[in-house]
Image (tube, rainbow, N blue to C red; front, side, top):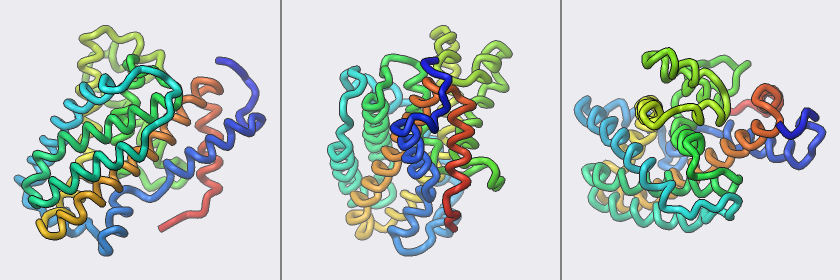
Length: 284
């Protein structure tokens, strides 16, 4: 750890943390999608037939597996390279427009492509924050981004939504070996560095399984919004742009926090983050 000085005594880093709080504690993706469509989307999601919802969940898991393998290695591994945020939104919009033109069934064809594009956009942000794309911990953190903005585990205002979501990743290995569970319980990049390739495969597969349950909620919202072909052709591009922008924002906040944790320590940053979050006006 580079310093024991409180983060508040470093204005540049503290302002970065404020930016992260503003990004990570913003309204959920479902809420933003409802605002875009002009009406609540939850009812349409609940009306989806059971087999369709199950198929969406399976497609989300497959898409996350595929994107995690492809996206990080499609970028040059040069930390601190500026992120190409507009380019990724353009790619996602094009993909969404093509998929939306054919209505809801096309989602299952479009999903692996759009998820890979979003994962690549997330990895691009990670790289710009100085993270090494070859490290397993970076791959893990990129996957974690897709759990942000989904359903929370608690309504406790004393805990931030961001850290609640992060805490679930440390519990994902409870049903694997005790050795892996102990590694997962530790915070920071050093934990996953101790995994051998077989352990890493188990860890990432289980992580994707858990993340998919949250990411699947937002994908179901996308499916419901694009269910009408005529509307879907117009909204497909807009929705994909919204999704990509949202996860770019989540990635920016997430990797700012992780960068600051590497310098100041997990507990110090979490305490400062929580204080900043609680001082923000509540939105409903």
